[in-house]
Image 1 (cartoon, helix red, strand yellow):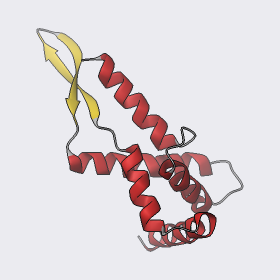
Image 2 (spheres, one colour; image 1 turned 90 degrees about the vertical axis):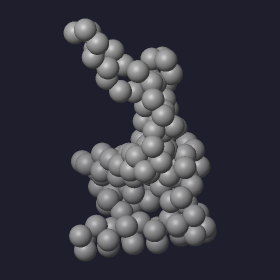
Image 3 (tube, helix red, strand yellow; image 1 turned 135 degrees about the vertical axis):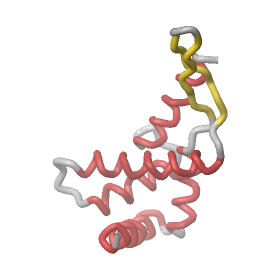
Image 4 (cartoon, helix red, strand yellow; image 1 turned 135 degrees about the horizontal axis):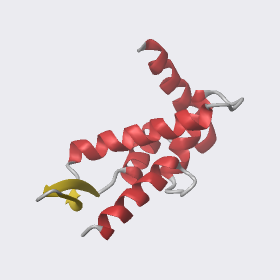
Length: 119
């Protein structure tokens, strides 16, 4: 837990140096940009399974946003000379600017595209 807190603290310092903005503001903007509004659920009816588009609850939206940001930073840090702090800071900055290079923003668009197709 202490190691995770130190990683986030150092990532916030890197975000502050790169953007010159408050890191909490960048985090909130990133969560807004990468939290999905729609998702799909599996419906089984008479032995047939199909997907149905549903709205996402606010708490789940926040949880999915944080999960996708962390997953993108973790994948970027694997087999890379950059540290996890630098990867997390870059993911936050990209997600905060609504850039498709961000894993979390790309995941949101993919989820919403699948949900729209299953309406």
